[in-house]
Amino acid sequence: MLKGLIKLIDENFPLFVPLGLLFGMFLGENVSGFQFLVPWLFASVTFIGGLKMDIDSFIKTITKPKPIFTVMLILRILMPLWALIFGLIVFPNDIYTRTGLLLFSLIPVGVNTVLWMMIVKGNVRLTLRACLKSFHKSRIMV
Image 1 (cartoon, rainbow, N blue to C red):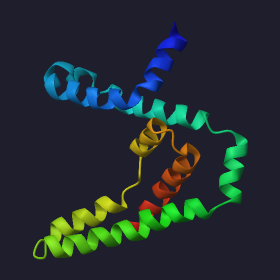
Image 2 (image 1 turned 180 degrees about the vertical axis):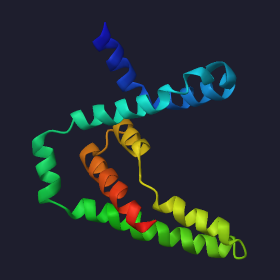
Image 3 (image 1 turned 90 degrees about the horizontal axis):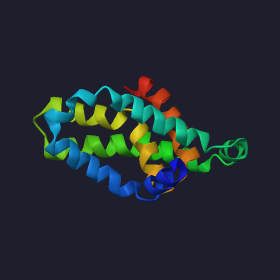
């Protein structure tokens, strides 16, 4: 029974996310008591995603570093540069909004990236490495 439930959830996960958002929007105050579960749920999703990574796939990401370097180039150089240019064009007289946009583009990629990679059956090992690298580099960049 549990395997059937897990299979059902796994196959329909892209539907559960919008339904969960709608559930939270319409029942906000009634379900706010469960807010403490959110970090635990995100941690569980990340942990489960990490369990799907075996030693061979980890070695593959180390021996073929081009994808991780490409991701880091986009996340740490192109995205902040885009945020800076966007801020200068759209908010030329508001330094605080421009600074906020720049800082927002420098924060770690986070668990939501792992969650969405699992939903769309993407490259979870690459995503986990990008999240870890992003987490460590964001401290320096900010």
